[in-house]
View 1 (tube, rainbow, N blue to C red):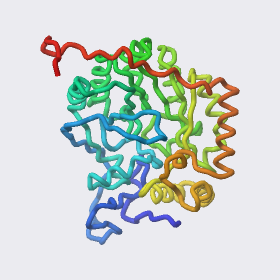
View 2 (view 1 turned 180 degrees about the horizontal axis):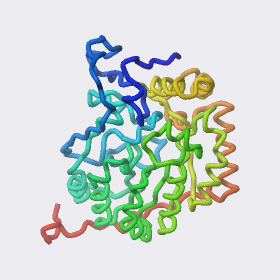
View 3 (view 1 turned 135 degrees about the vertical axis):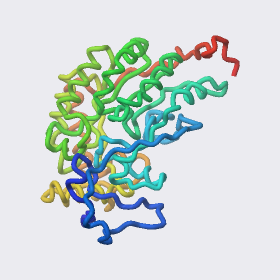
View 4 (view 1 turned 45 degrees about the vertical axis):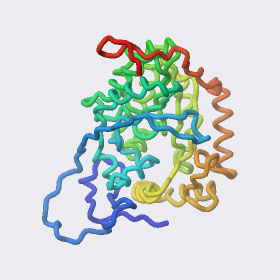
Length: 361
């Protein structure tokens, strides 16, 4: 596969962003392929982050995937300003008529009534409690959360209902909510997974340009752990031929920072992410691009990615198994192979309605 970078995206305009292109989504009737020359004389500034609001009627999303340890999740935002070029959630922006490329990290959608809707859903007589996951699609602690506070409002509802929640993030803003998370953790109601990809600050800055540095993420693990919040170090994704040599150092650094468990996921390139990743590799690591893609194709039967359950997270073949064995051995040696304690569901109890009356429905 060859790179598809378009000449109309000036590198200065996309500085600090992960994707190199902003090609049309797969559902668009009109596909933008190249610059027609009409705006060549126009001075165009850097891509700015724009946030629109979406008033939702439902918040909790349910799944039946055997690959996932949860059956429900919450997303306070669509899109993610962290700009991780490898993000498997990028294709979801196509459903909005937006590009999985630069649009995904610059045109965000916030859900300001998320907490209100969540409270209504948790009060429903038909609701059955089980741990809810947050951050499995887009990061709830991306920079926009600092001003919007939607994730904090959602956490406030979960705390009131004593509802179990597992969080995945690479955003340092999670430390702001330790005052909520620590008491919940003391009741066995929460744990946090911190995504680690590399210890190389330069590689991280290129690959996930607006996410905290590797050193900062390790300090996040320490802050959460010191507050009594169980932390899982998530090596996600492992990029074969680029970051796979860091499995053992990452696990050691995470253990030293206070992580008590660890997991890993192989790089996933669904739909448009394959082209975005290939563009990025060709631009930043041209001598490694074909090696990375060859390893992935070997793991997925000749394709860059296969979506089948049981295969999509890890791949198959000698290289996939080699990484898995190295992870298992290092995790066992470091005491990170026991997993986190299960979240409690027996404490769930809807509080009084906000008007002070008992909730009947």
